[in-house]
Image 1 (cartoon, rainbow, N blue to C red):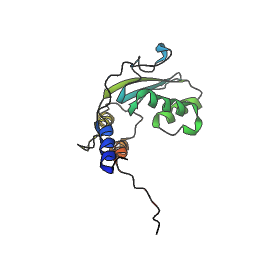
Image 2: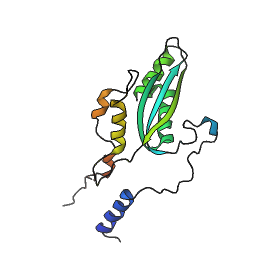
Image 3: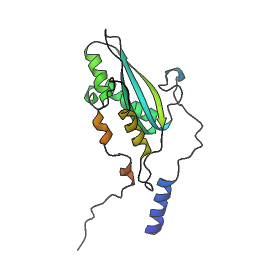
Image 4: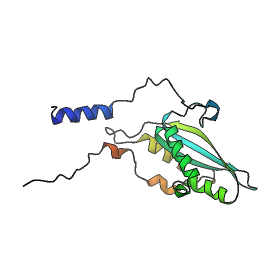
Length: 174
């Protein structure tokens, strides 16, 4: 049976080692023409921009800036759920706008692009470049058609949580 030091060292090595860079595929969409990111949907650690347009008269396009530590495709799936299932319509500012257009009998269309890639939280430096890049993009967005709220700039990094030790309650037998 491995000792505690071996278990912790193994976990640290798994978490701290860089991900395998030998990924051949950039896209696994069955219909390449319908890939949301031009055959780059398996890109990880991205800050992305979604542009929502509509056929409604006088509708001004709006932008949303988001991030995904996992593959963009996994995040995109979450967005698709919030566009299709009304119970998730307020999960992001983008989905709220999407449903607003639908409720006005418009047809919303969302296009996606990667703004930049960055490394997620590093426990050695205690910095998350991914969150910082997203905050930078939101803070420096030049126009007034951004759906993100400025309060997102002061949000805590959600990526560091996986590096914290969990405290487990154990029943002590006396």
